Image 1 (cartoon, rainbow, N blue to C red):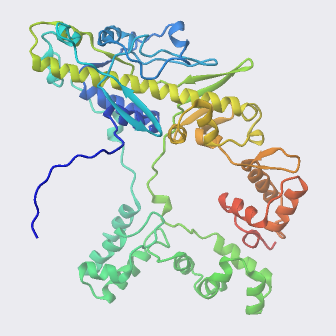
Image 2 (image 1 turned 90 degrees about the horizontal axis):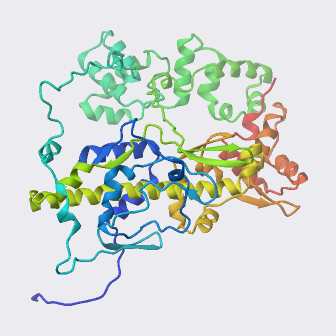
Image 3 (image 1 turned 180 degrees about the vertical axis):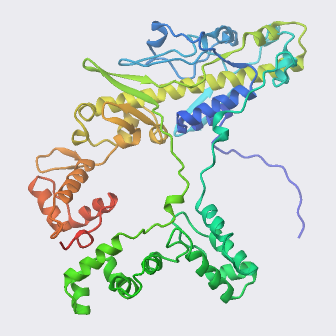
Length: 532
């Protein structure tokens, strides 16, 4: 059987993302900190972009309040409008306020970008380009690059006279916080052991999770160093004697037994309960356990109090504390009877196009290769500015609709939150559902009710007996309050909670109550029962 090359033609449809649209989608998903990192990266990579100094940052009142409801996001204007950005009008600016108002970040003119089309999230966006006609001048050919091009090619160069030596910052002298492995290895080095046992112990320490439990099996550890099982078990015993007590256990049951023995309670009833009856103890089946052991329930309660004083996560105190920094994307403030949506641009670099590169493009002495390079950098810079503006416009539109639908919540608290779905906002602003999802995910708003993730405004609902739609978050809050007010000796069952909700007009099944309770990480009635 032989194969012969052939030529054929066919028609096909496919989705194409231009670099500009790909960047636009990625920027919608970014929070403020991630956007700041992107802008800083673009400033270092694109010499055409420059950051405004604090003295130059100013936005007039008319710039900060321009109606854009009828303005297309991708405006097509001649390339000569680069001048509007080169003189500083392309800076990224301040607030949105009022119905249908937003700042015009790029001025009234916006430059054309590379042509192409794409179908993104069910929408088609296209940008037109055209070749200059014969005898027509290309505006890029008239832009002067100047004589400072070499300086931008090597922005890190400094003469000896202008070099400024930076002293190390104070935080470089701070000691790093020790981890659980560091703490255990420090103790292990002071322990007299055989060399192979010492190495096996180090491997065991390296396989502990943040809670201090051993994740790898002993046979796996033995295979790592080709040690005998006796060596590995001896190493495990040594690590389990180190501080904090209870580390290197395979599970919670073993960790509690280690802690009880270390306290001298190895022969006490509490240790026997954990060792032989851990399942019933874990599920609070104290009456059944007391009947099986022939002991009064009060004695089991006394031993249970001792067990509860033990640490179920012995290694957590040494776990790395990776703080998650939250910075509000917008401020939603109430002034008189109106809510104002204000962007939080503190710390975000304010951008503009460098004027010198326009002069270099207009210079006849600049080579074609140089002009081509700056032409590409110009387009990349303008795409970034336009995408930042598009991101702000989209976030503002979503926040505006959220404020309209959740005014009662912003005024009076979580008890007044209304059911709202992503598709409701999507239909209001005329954007795809996935676009709204990208906007609200991971972004926070500073509201009269505190700093809240935008996604938390969205909740499902149900219709009560009065025909009113009520948010499931309010129902969860009612369930939580019922459980907090219950008698710990006879806690409410899911059926009892469902009956109480039905009396208030919200009819839920027992299974639904259990689902909401699990979502709030509240244990069942048997686990909540306490014998006093």
